[in-house]
Image (cartoon, rainbow, N blue to C red; front, side):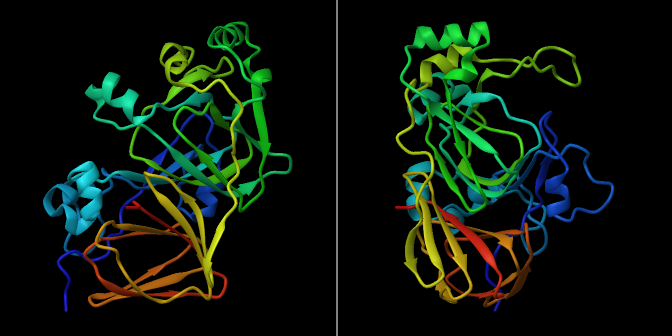
Length: 327
């Protein structure tokens, strides 16, 4: 039978920032002509339009407004209202991103209420990393706000930042308030709160390609929200959940799991939250009472909280990430 809210496949938004590269377009096997500097593919977020099926042409945000808990789930609605609260994306950093920080919910609601955004906590799953690649995460040692601001002003701030080497499969947790950067040579999957509040602290003197002006910094805001300390933990150790399943991250805003061949196949959605499934390697199929979706590398699928029973079929080499809002 046909389900009122079937699994939802969306059209990604492609973003071409100054630091983007060419690996992601090739990894996604995008048709020509490919973007010359693809830095991000926003797989799932509230403005994504659904492709195919009875909801085609509508955005996830509009569907959340119409269907509420049937799409996003009961405890998600209780926390966020009729909103789609997560954003899943791929990032390819051919060049390093700015040193930056994101505010927490409290600051966002007090001082950025006009944007409609919450704070921004995020997590990264490293897909590829050139030899010697690292991410920036917190400070080497504690600093005062004044000392940090002075280092930004005189261009020595990089010396204060801690570098964490990464390899494919590493998991990095970036709570709001963490000074951080994705450095050159890294491609990753990111799950985050749906927020575009980013405060640039230092951008290496780069200029906007269109205007020729130095890219905007947000030092005053960054000094208000940053933790000027070493990070307690950057890399996260996965926790085994059973055959073929690992929990990578769990925080109040999202949980992220890694699924491989041998994981359970007969599943049921939790009425409390939607699920985002993303294929990192191999291929998979999602079967439900209204049909089948075949998924390959780079594909993402949103399962409404009200979907109920479904079957997940993984090829032997498949690796999928599952994200949802925990209770």
